Length: 122
Image 1 (tube, helix red, strand yellow):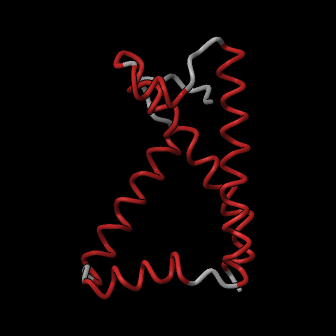
Image 2 (cartoon, one colour):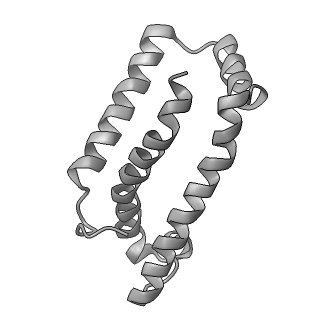
C-alpha cells in the first residue's frame, strides 16, 4: 500500500484529514445543520444523478475496485493478510493497517479529482 512506516501518517494524509475537519466544522458553523439541509443532501446525492453524475456513479466504484485489487495483490506478494480482515480481527496490526489506509487514501482522492474535475466544473 504505502512505503511510509505504519506507525506514522504521511504529511499528505495529515493535511487531507486536517483540511476535511476544518471544512466540515466551518460548514456546520456557517450554515448549521437542519432537517432541510439533510433532505437536500440526500436529494442531491441519490435522487439527482443527471448526466455528469451518472458517469461518476460508474467511474468511482470502478476506480476503487482497481485500487483495491492492486493493493490486495501487493499485500499477497508481501505475504500479509487481507486488509479488511486484518482491521476487523487482528488487534495488534489494526492501527498500523488503518494508518496505511489513511496514507494511501490521498493518492486515490487526487486521482479521483483529476478524472472527475471536468465533469464537476461544467
